[in-house]
Image 1 (cartoon, rainbow, N blue to C red):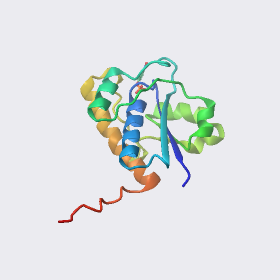
Image 2: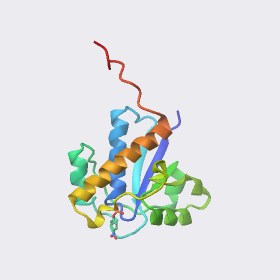
Image 3: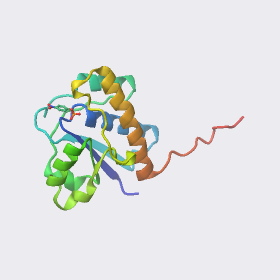
Length: 162
Ligand code: 4NP
């Protein structure tokens, strides 16, 4: 099976897209999908390049066992070649990605597409609770994307046995 490479993109690459990447990585590990899926994240804005993720995002990921070491980086032209699915955290990010994508426009989607569009909470100006809310929203979206990419999780064969 061909590996599907997923890139999560937000404005700063310090809150929403690292949260999405952390959740995705956690699910991939839980479901043993490391051979078929890989993820990274990037920013459309330059301001936080080289920085670790926002401390609130790190705290929420730690609470959920989804923390990973992360350094913010801007999106590059090569990303549009190398990734199969490029998921934008909001419409502004989607618009910027579509402008940069050239012949790869078809790879760009809104992260909230499985909800039929809409916005996730941007925790940048919020507190830890806002970040937790973002985590819960993105977790649901990641599960829906995974369902699209690889299907539903297989039933535990032990489930329901006496
Ligand atoms: P993110 O949050 O896009 O979820 O990483 C933001 C981080 C930084 C800024 C905006 C949003 N900023 O304007 O610096």
